[in-house]
Image 1 (cartoon, rainbow, N blue to C red):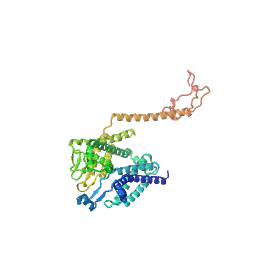
Image 2 (cartoon, rainbow, N blue to C red):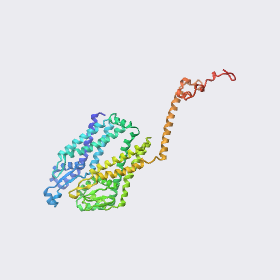
Image 3 (cartoon, rainbow, N blue to C red):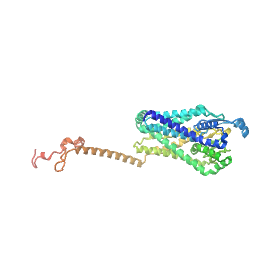
Image 4 (tube, rainbow, N blue to C red):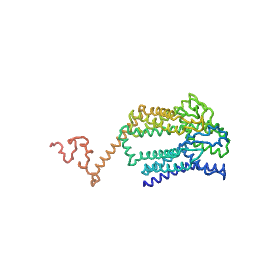
Length: 477
């Protein structure tokens, strides 16, 4: 496929990703505007609000500044009229990241991964710039630089990760292949890099899956509290729908909170609060329905949940070790130790980045501290994954594993022996058949050296001679 066409298709993918994200926000807001305000609605505010929320969904913090008349009418304290919203609804960010990874993978399969990923990222950055310039609000402002760079960075990371993954596996006849050859030239250390990345992917997916399961379990156990918070808002059907959609946008954020809870450090829902397995100290919780899922209490015995990240790390170590055995590359203890350490470090890095996006401020005063602590979350999760991965990667090799390795080696040797035998047989079957159907004796010159006894290490005296050349019985030469 031509490079220009790859770049154009990647740019089109970026436009689709941005359009879907904006449409998901614009459609319900348009319905809300129509039903709430009717024909007298201020339609000029609809697009700026949509763009601001889209930027917020990609990590750009919003500075809220309520007008004086609103503060007076509602009865809000003057010191609460200005605050920051920085806890990102990660649903939009995750969608953009996955869509970009898919686009980058398609560009890599087309043979122009770098051009495709770069072209799509530039197109997405241009769209983000247009949205940032045209969506300024007086009461909800975002930094123009952050509104452009953060969505662009999300798409860039996703596109290049997806493209490099495919290029690494399939080859690109370029820089990725040269890097692959360089890694392969490291000898026993060559498989370490791929094993670390593979183990990290398994660990991250495992943590996300178990955390999502924990959120679902809490939704079943504490659905009544969430419904009660919905009822206290006393909104109509349209407001209920909008609030439900907002809570769904924060579902990935809640999964990050649940992962921090499973790891041990937990998270905060205000200054001086803590939600962790060891104990819960909440105080007054904001009337946000999704916060009804928070556990009311904890116990020191609930710290047993830290076994979940350890089990995830052990599973990642088992996957890596099984793959190494299957490929016939059982590494020594130093390499396996580095793999376990690399999995823990990368998993902790991903946890820190997720915690930074899932924490911050959701309101004034005490609500300025919400979410997990990035450093504590990263250290706890990385340490637990390290323990689990080390158990499987550093354990002595089981006799079944050694037997499987010996079996694979024996099969490989037998296959090579069969190939040599077939080659020898094909060299000896080139003579013509006799008139009576019996094949002529092959000339010694027609037999390959490897197939002759001499080629096998025998002396000339051990070779056979034609019967016609033998002396009569009882005579001597």
